[in-house]
Image (cartoon, rainbow, N blue to C red; front, side, top):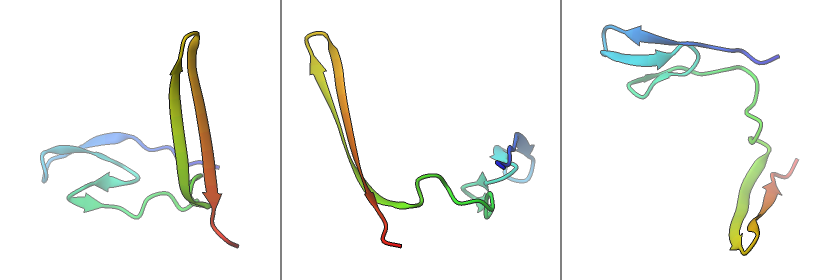
Length: 65
């Protein structure tokens, strides 16, 4: 289950903030579930322009268990 938040005005900081993550001046802990990419330690991403379009490639490095 994914928590959905909204953006609200923070009168103290005069900025918009996420109800889940806060804003850079006062960050919040965020959602309790792990981020989808947290199980990866890195990635190599590539994009090539070709005569008939684009070619993309992604290789993800998994974190050891």
